[in-house]
Image (cartoon, rainbow, N blue to C red; front, side, top):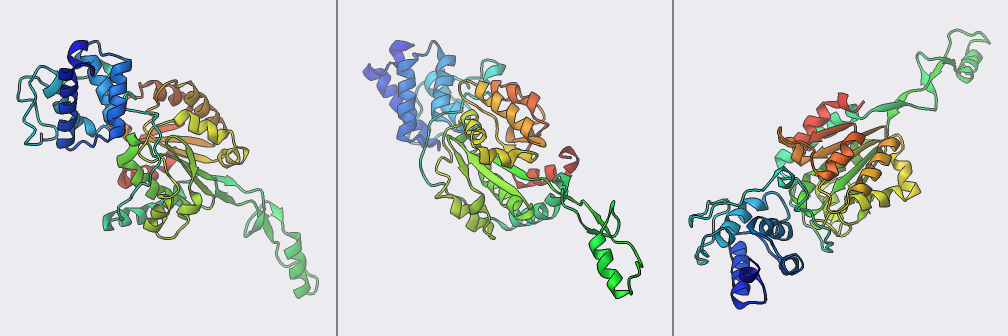
Length: 372
């Protein structure tokens, strides 16, 4: 295996170059940075067998679960026993191997989808682009704006306001009315402590593994800022970014356009634990989470040590009124939080649900009983 794949031999180097060319021809973007990471990984950790090579290659060259449909057949052509295909005709994404190789199946449950193997710590610095909101999405956003305020949990206000019925006499209003009736007290006036919305804190994962969902999650956050009295929104990939000021714009497309110059780590690596620790290390940010409804929109695919992530989520859960975690992976009925990151945070969250787009977000909002 080492001799056939070593970059130091001409045959091995030509084989790797052909494999990378075929990935690009099949429609999988493989920029120079990913190619460099791939070759460095092969040099640092020489693969023991095809299965080991599969996970090294997939972890360095793919960024989302949808890339796997294109990646697997190309990998099987080049490394699972079949000869190199004809590069003149791009391979169809998801096509089966016609050379007798077959797809390389994940070896065990720990390496299944959502195991964190595709997560990366690589930082990027570029402007993300967002397409315009369609008419169907605008209708879903309108439903979200209508139903969201009723779903947010409430707390009794400390200030009392005039009310028809209450638990305390409004002496000032009674005295003012008595001037109009010659000093007679005709009817009592009351004050009470009304219910008001709890603060809402939204933390959105914009890393590469969430690329397909970040657009809708940010549109949902725009509705949260518009419909809730006290709302704050942060994004995190490889760093934490406060985006509430940009989301206060009235038009959703204008708000997302303003985010392109602020959120510079979109579609890059994932550092959930360090990002949450950065949030909790700021006293002003901690005040935003205290007694709030905290929504974390992330797949939970953490790379490396998951201890900081578990500790940060535990503290965030103690600060918040409710900690709700929305993951696109949880939309699958067979999903189980068995990865190291999610297995560590599940005991500290109040509700785990599947949200991958605006429609599933609206469905979760309709089930507001889980938040109260």
